[in-house]
Length: 235
Image (cartoon, rainbow, N blue to C red; front, side):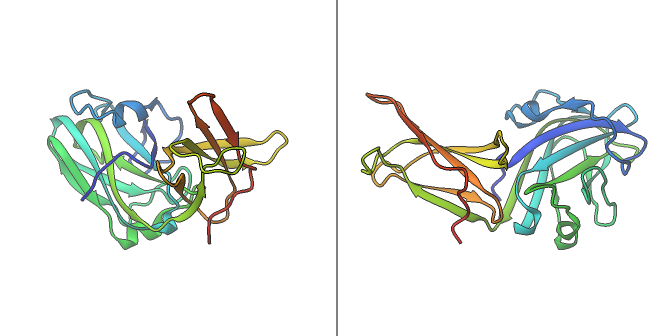
């Protein structure tokens, strides 16, 4: 398996009436803390009421064929079971295919099956899962990672200068067009460096969306440019 924090967009926590209750008001944004690689620092404590942890993953659920989510428990004040649940809409989860695991300390993995994946709601090219404490486990969480298999679409190109000649090793950033406005609004997705010989680049994208690519190169002189905001997946 290959666990990483890539594609994890948000990690949030709150207390609720039960592990299955709607989100209500989220209490804490733990995104940075839960993705920084520090397993020793406590980010989230399952100790007061029923505390829930929402993990948002920025891949359309229809593209996903396998998923394992793991959490690092730096300390278990009370050992016991925690459940991973799929979000079936923006605020609600389903207990039907919950994956329960015993929480002591260390990494605890929740490998989901096809029935779990089938319940995931598409929340706009992303989905979410919830870690919930049914009643007994009181865990201190410090990290979250995912091992995910998915089939993307692609958007490819070649970085060039104003004369149309290949310009290599450029920083290339891709933005999803959220609204064509006016004014236009964008969501930053990812940056990478174009190939050092060919200038080629490729991004994982999703059909049905429009994108804009911005390129820059710190050199003599500094150069930069942007595409139109109508780029789509190479189908």
